[in-house]
Length: 211
Image 1 (cartoon, rainbow, N blue to C red):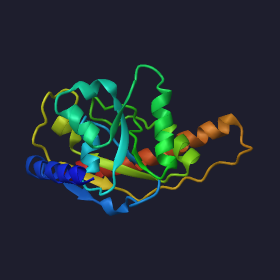
Image 2 (cartoon, rainbow, N blue to C red; image 1 turned 45 degrees about the vertical axis):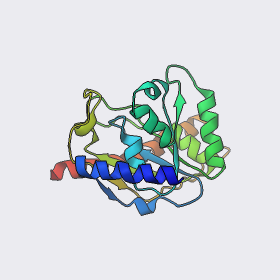
Image 3 (cartoon, rainbow, N blue to C red; image 1 turned 90 degrees about the vertical axis):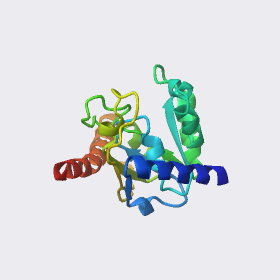
Image 4 (cartoon, rainbow, N blue to C red; image 1 turned 180 degrees about the horizontal axis):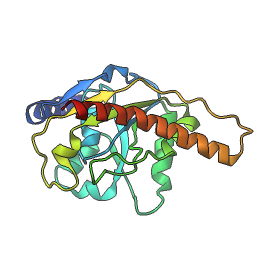
């Protein structure tokens, strides 16, 4: 933990100088107990950025190929990443996520399922809702502003653009009635995923409009 905190402070100092990074509402993330963080996703650096102001360790799934990228791969591991094969169903990664949450851990999931390649947020997938219901973990939506401009999939090196991160109030989901049919359950999951997306995108649109 000492090494992690040292690395976290170092990365924060670099981001403060290079990106003029700001964090708002990080205190809303519970200090203990199971929790899922759900940020929008525009750059490979997003998981590291979200982790910087948090004193507790996060775990998150990351594309297995990224672990072979010099420097970034090592940083990802240090900040709690574990590999997932995105070209095939990786049940091992899902099982690991469930175990981590059930043991009271903090997990980061990108509900879009990948980085936006246009700058526009993609629809949130319902898997995060299913995971939250199954484990009873609240979800903290996170809005990352400026990441696409700073380090989009089209850039080979981060650019010095202003970054802001907003941590929203935790969302606790009430499980639907157990006697509900599969279609009703599916509709509920999509409805809650859209609700989370509205929180994240609403802040994103507000900040971009004020620029």
